[in-house]
Length: 388
Image 1 (cartoon, rainbow, N blue to C red):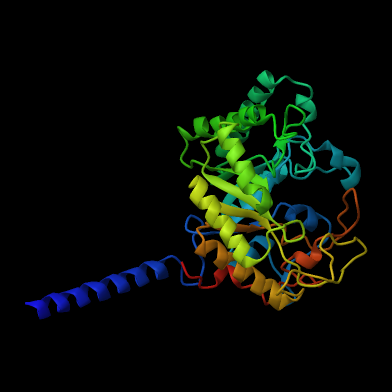
Image 2 (tube, rainbow, N blue to C red):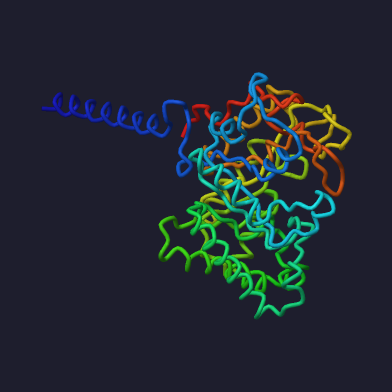
C-alpha cells in the first residue's frame, strides 16, 4: 500500500511539473512573443510620424519597412503614445504642424492596433512636456481654482476616451499624468515641501473617475497607470499619494527608470525596490520608461542626453550590452514581481526633425537602430525566454 502511495505521488508530481511547463510555454506564441496582459513588452512610439515626415526611413538590412511592422516583428506587444492638450508651441518649430495632439495620436494608435499591439495612452494634461521639473497647466485651464480644474480634468479625460472609442481605438491602458513625482497641473496640484497631496490627489482621482465612468459601457476597459519618475522616489511617492492624496483606485504603478538619473542602479537594488513596492502596495508594477545606450557616438550635431564615458558598473555602451542590460532588467523585474517594461522612444533616430533645442536626435544612441536607420541585429530581448 505504501508503494502505491509513493507511485501515485510521483505520477501526480510529474503531471504537475509538465502541466506547469505547458502553461509557461503557452505564454508565448510560436514567434516568441508575449501577450501584453501577461508581461508588457512596450515601446514609446510617439515620435514616429514626425520623424517620418522629416525624411527618415526605417529599415531592416537596408530594406525600407514600416516602423510599426518592425516593432511588432521584434516582439513589441504595447505601443505607448503621449497626448498633449493643445501644443501650439510647436507651430513655429515644425513649420506649421502639430504632433502629439489628438490627430497625430489617433494616427499612431491606429498603426499600432493594426499590428495587433495594445496601446498605452499617456495623458500629460499639459500643452507641453510634463516631467518632474515642469507640469505646466494647459493655457485653456490657467488660473482655474481646484474646484473647477478637477472638472476640467474629468471632462477632458472622458472626451478623449469617447473620441477614440468612436474611432474603435480605445486604449487598453491609460496614464493619468506623466512623471508626476511632484504633482501635476502646477501650481494647483504641485507638491512642495511634502505638502499639497490632497489637491494633487483630487486631480488624479478626477481623471481616474472619468476612466471608470467611461468603462461602464465600454467594450475595452482601460487599465489605469499612475506614474512616478525614478525608483528612489517610488516608495515615498506612492505611500503619500495613497495615504494623503486618497488615490487608491488605480491598476498599475508606473515608474520611469533611467540609470542617468537614478540612485538605484545595481540589479539587486532594483529588484529589492520592486519587491518592496509590490509587498507594500500590492499593485502591478511596470517600468513605463527606460533606455540604455549602445554607443557613445553621435549621428548628428544635436548633443545626446545620454553621453558618458562611465556607464553603470558591469555594462558598457555597446550593442551587445544594450541587449544584455535590457535582458537583465526584465528578468530582475519578473523575478521580483514586476509586470512590464516600456522603452522610451526607441525609434527617435536622426532626421531633419527640429525641436526647441536642436535638429536631428538627442537620443539616437539609445534607439534600436544604427546610424543608417537599420534595425540593430542585437535587438531580441523582447522575445527572450524569461523565467517566470
